Each structure stands twice: as C-alpha cells, then as structure tokens.
Length: 99
Image (cartoon, rainbow, N blue to C red; front, side):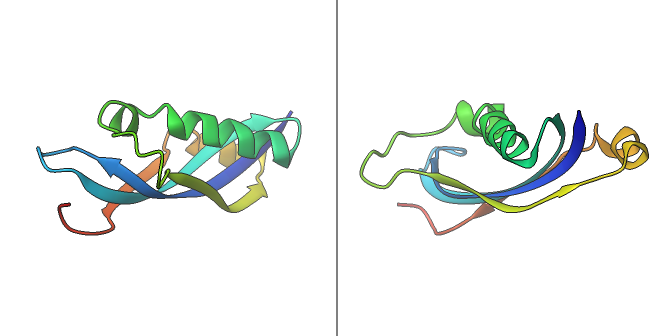
C-alpha cells in the first residue's frame, strides 16, 4: 500500500452550530494508505463526510448541495506517514453570515 497526504476543500455546508443556520466551508488534510491516488481521494471524501462536526449539524439543502473537492494529493514517505498520520488538520470557516 502506498501512503498519501490528501488535502480537501469543502464548500457550501449549511450548518446549525449556534442556533442560526450559516454556510461554512472547510479545509481538511488526511494521511491515508491506499493502492493508488484515486482510491485515496475517495477514502478521504468519505471520511470527511463522516466527520461528527459536519454530520451532526448539517442541514439538508437539496437545491444548493455541499461540495467536497480535491485540492492536492501527494504520495509521502513511510517515515512521514508514521510521524504525521494521527494529526489530521481540519479548519471550519464561515462563508457568509446568518441566513
């Protein structure tokens, strides 16, 4: 298995974090093992959609659905993977004010 660092960007997530629905975006970096880059990207997106921060407070909006897009993916060394894999980076950013 190869080791990858996958950087994702999420946008258009309608979340109710403090009682008022607002749109948020996020950046996420994950360290993953996968057979190839395509599988690593798919795994990272699945894991992002399962994050409790997003899953528990997401409001469904079928007219304007949220998106997760790949920013960058790169194969990394086994040593870097061993040192960093337990440190995923997740940053949630408001896209606009209350609706």
